[in-house]
Length: 329
Image 1: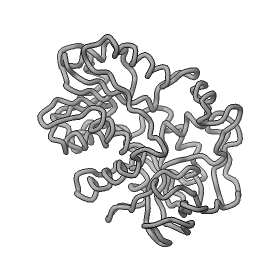
Image 2: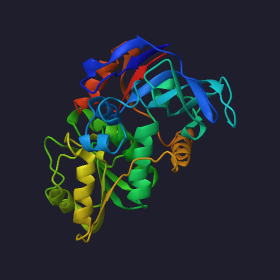
Image 3: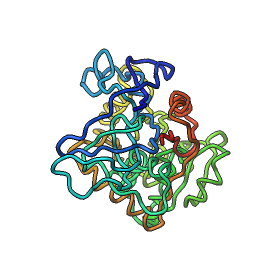
Image 4: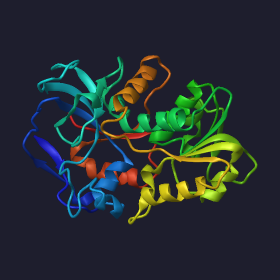
């Protein structure tokens, strides 16, 4: 099968499209023929092997990538199921977390998958897993957004942001989206009552106060972010794109924890999904919102499998609109 292979840590140009063996579905596993795979900040962190502290923790490999085939978010069709798998069979359309998603086939465990909602293309379905689950956790689980609250989403035109605006609107919050001028109409169409152009307005100047701030960008110091909160407000920090080659998001979370210990406001990170955690429940909740017509994936650009390096560079530049997706089959 064709796959995008990562043999060393480095820039996107280090990726190679190669012929590799097709993975095998063992007990409890599902083999998926991938039709589309989404690109996330997670992917370029894995590509470059940063932050370095993550290598020490064993998540990505110490001197070379732990998983030679890149990618995680996928949508496609079940090819084969292993022993003890219930609920899926060959031919089923699925989406979810599939390590090695930038390939014609990828293997994962059954709890990491859910059915593709009716009416979605594979490209739209691939856009859901990491970004939509992160947004759901940021808005509902960590931020605990309630009806009538004032919610600000920084980076509202990006992958997580476009989902977060919609989910907060579904919860009947008054949503303010911060994005580029080019994305203001999009963000307003997703349910934002107010839209700020980050090039012209600074939401941390203290003139506006919000019950919940979801920060997907990390372009403001913590002290200024707190100025945007009400006295009992909640800052939700999404560290997926956090800079810093040594500590990155880990360092950001430690600083957040230290500040939270003395702050009256609540300062919370969005913790990554644990393999044995409520991933399936979160995926199911997200697809239920899609099925109900309350959430729609926004796909900004698509790339061919052979152009995966270009797709990663596009996301790493930090100005991607909605989700960037690689079309595989």
